[in-house]
Length: 604
Image (cartoon, rainbow, N blue to C red; front, top):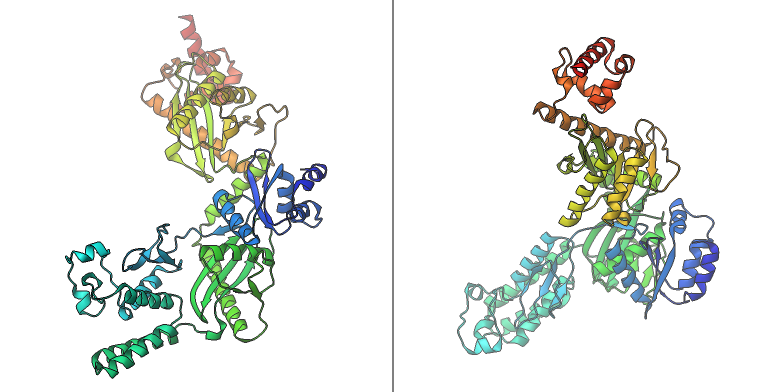
């Protein structure tokens, strides 16, 4: 989008909070952002002089701008996060987080059960979490069941069922783990008080639970029920011990989210700590990939939006290493200089540093997939060099060969993520073409290959390489157009020997640097299709599928025949060739033998 085009668009962009979306010429979503002032934010991309290369590349690709004004500034956070998650625009920060976090659910039912789940359903139940550790959730549930009497059976305890009196208390009742609501030995109000204690424990707020147990203990002692009083005393001791072993900063701090990060090259390593009632109840490490060279503040703005939404945090305070700009004016941002909050931030920074060091250690030990990362870098470079609209993670290459024109064949190889995908290799016997016609043969095999993929609903490649010049490319494109696949893949021709790349409709070829990684990848794909095709030919020959006059010549073996047919394409062309031309391929002595034998055959 030019500056002149932007001037026409800007007046229509409101000076209000919302989200903006950048699209390229193919209406592919490039970037989603949020802003307090949409017009100022959008114009800043086109007026900045000191921008990173990636930002310049984004601006170069922008063809159209869309925006959405939201009712509240907080809504911009959630809408931006939702769109990024749904469309994963290529220029937005990429969050390396595909985990499914568990919840503790308090089921919406009479005498609600409490259990672990990974699925959050809109059924009126109360979901607490998500939690970052399944093991911790299980420990929490076990801890709760040791101290709070709640049922763990799956009985339907609706009033209509309880009236029938068909349920009997189980062993859990006799062990003191349940108060027997199934026999109406516990009221729903009393059960509700137990659930409140469960919620307090899960939030790290143990004081109300301990206070309740102490009041019960005093009442049991007053009633001379010393056995139950002793049970409560042990529960109180256990809860006090649990609180002491958890990381308690200061109960007066209340609720807060603590986020810190370490930035290395284009990666950011974050640590998040959820603090409730002064206790750290959850911690999580996350890795981010910066797409536009975002600075610390910009990465933190994204991280805060994601984390608070992901972990359903409503803490009124954020403790961060730097000030950031947020749309939620109700949220307090603290950059502590000393005191308990400073200690909290330092603890988070320590964990972020450990997370980063662990990443470096794994990389040094080659526990990370270096080859995959390297391949991704190469295909990203190939996309850039060939100006492809899509990242070519799936590439297919075709090559045709004819043996005397009677049994033409074709081979196709497939590369995925820069590696051969041999299960997807295909061999083709030409069915509809008679004689030597490379163009028609290419048209046939391309049509057969992609017609089948479309019919079977299989994934199409982003890049198709035709081993041949403009003629083969044009023939292949006839089939691509007939299948209406022009917009879904890029098809290029690779000229033999000189390694020029042709695009449909272009007069000039594209010549990549001879030592570039992009050309090396293309070259390896071409060599692989040649190898695969030759292997196919040899297999056919060994089965006697291809029989030519050359097979009957004494002193000429399979290797010599293959070299001749590859160079001259047919026996007829070999017959017409001079001894000198044949000698260049197979040497003078064998050339004389072949020439003499073919002349004798022709004379008969």
